[in-house]
Image (cartoon, rainbow, N blue to C red; front, top):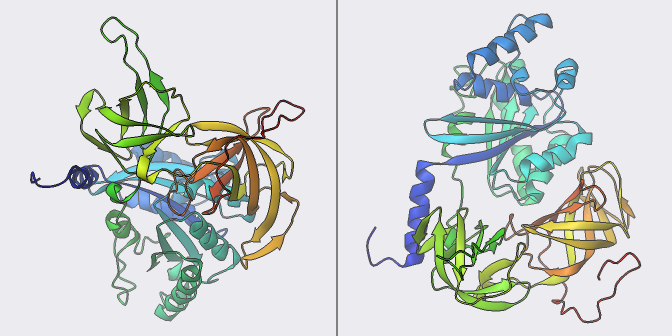
Length: 455
């Protein structure tokens, strides 16, 4: 690394080097019922030698007890008893495995319509989504639904895995027609990158090893694509966002006046000397020190966990956000967002909730539900009045305190939030902030409702 590089360029270069050494891909699988998601995941784990001997033995035993001669690799992911008995995936099953080239965190999500919320959960942090299609059925309504969810969640990469090619005699025209239909639809939704791969999860064609039955296909196998698809972004290209998780004040004789702010950098790069604004208060200061796991550094970048010290002794607590003074987000108490409702109890206008954004939790009221999205045809149902489980729609909220939200388009981390039941702490709804907000609130005229909620 040459000395004439700026500190920001040095940070970006170091991040690239660090990523190359510890590259990790989070990906989710999705598809209609019986398209073979769990079998694909099981084949991926089995053929990449990521299954322990006792796990494989348990699968073989369970398969024999069900009258199957060959091991049912889907059982490697269908871990719940109800899933094994019904032969379907109910919950999101997370699996961790690695190859010499990359580490993986895999979320196998259900295919049933009533479990759309589970796909939202699994794909919300994914770098890539694998959408399976049964070659015999082609693109169906649930395929479009999953493509729409991937687009909504801004998943950077989508793989179309056309499965069960062995049941259509490995016919290239069948694959080509499905790939064209899906690619056209997903591209219309704004999915940035789509890769189509013909596979047979049951037989292992093009999952880990190239298929001898489809010599007309010259692209990568599923694992090859997962190992080589670009992940992460240059942190120097994003504005810095540092949610404060904990304030460190040892108050010892050695450090009587020390005050550090600990947390994980959500995006961008922090440098000693940077002018920062503390939100939502709007007070300003400058970074005087960065402690990265006991080592003092001049530069740190997302997603490192660090402790920051500032030049001024400000009133900062958990939930505050440090951002560059020249690229600080506006604060607002009026939030319009796209949400996916996760709970069986409907979300209604007037509901009082807690809104959790990064490390900050505030009270909020649902002021309006303008529309509900129909994923099958992407039409909007106006003024639905409520959102039921698995529904995706637009909501308008009023919060008791200002929030420093980014648009979800710009940052999946600082543009997302959760709505929580204040009575029992249950997660109700996952939200994605829109790119337009009301004017920043100054707190004037705030009223207290009859239950003591400040608005």
